[in-house]
Amino acid sequence: MMAMDMVEDAGYEVIAVGDATEAIRILETRLDIRVVFTDIDMPRGLDGIKLAAAIRDRWPPIEIIITSGKAWMAQQELPARATFFPKPYRREKVVAEINRMAAVPLM
Image (cartoon, rainbow, N blue to C red; front, side, top):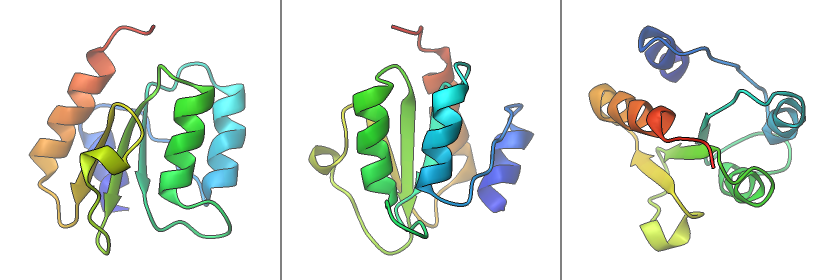
């Protein structure tokens, strides 16, 4: 909930999902999504890393932010152009990254 509030407070629309399968269903129908913010730990099936890999394969222009309070990801372990923020993260750094990603022209 804190992440959703942070993104909304930054002026962006949030689409909350319960799991990666739901996220993929939404991505299949919405062409306006520019940035996906996911936790590594997700319920029922795909984790956030597998979701990020699926996004990179199917929707290359979408930017990805991954977070976790349990795992630390090195840049070489992430899908191309994904950014990792360990918890607890600094709100201003995450918002700055979302702003940067949202400003990147679609490919």
